[in-house]
Length: 365
Image 1 (spheres, rainbow, N blue to C red):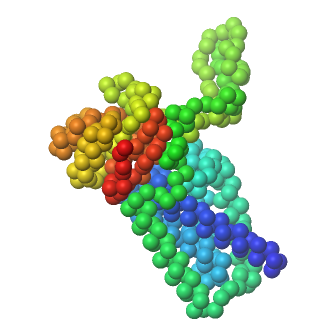
Image 2: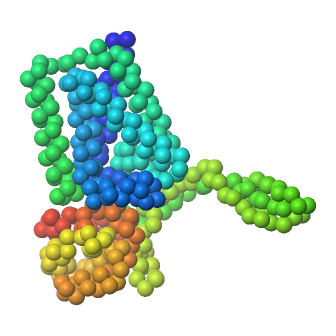
Image 3: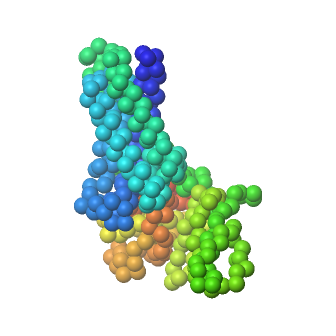
């Protein structure tokens, strides 16, 4: 039993640290996922919306710290109860999203590892069982170091998490797991490889035959039935391949210019997913950057999910010499965790990507 508890302790502790660190690398992204849960269509907890980022930071740091506490045996009783409370909460969320199909990715491992809702729920159930096992054998969860050493380890862990969180919030994630990272080609990311699995659907066709309801299930072909067609219900049996880059458009007046703009040899994208939430004062500096880019032969465009009234007002206020295009808000949030942020592309390949605090790092050649 002692050795089993030891292995479970290491597994749970390391998993919590890894899961927490991946989300700590991108707390803004995790806050977007929390906003999905808080939305009216899911849990309807709108009063938490303004605090999504703060909750995100608190949860991910707590996740890492609890993993460290378990590994070194620091305040075991408190650690186990905290782990139990956290996993029960996560299990509820993943079950809710899986059963009601509300949130298609729980964000458990950020953008590093994508899990389906049922996979996430299964993972949490396994962790719940393992944590309960730790409760049963908690007498074997013994301290690894002397009290003073444990306190030092905890202090260093907490300070490290805080410093790391501060850095990624004021710049960009240190590790970029998204399909828009530097070096990735956006157009290639939109493609579907040859032989990629296709989605498979079942179709339940409903007819009225001789006054009675009759349902015929096929894989797509319309059945030959001597009766009145009522309707059809479609069920996805197997998911098809989804390109890493999807829902990517650059629209203006209803026309999508994405493919043509991605062929530009020198392109600067100024991205502000929502101008109501954007640090608009930074557009004074962005204008300088954009002007310098244009002098060096770059085409500069703005991309936002905000309407023309807001983008036109912004262009007029700061004297911007480039126009804004419309792009889906979720896509823009995925591209860069900064509002505003700037990308430099060469024929669709991301060459540079910066937070608005790092505009001075941009170079135009």
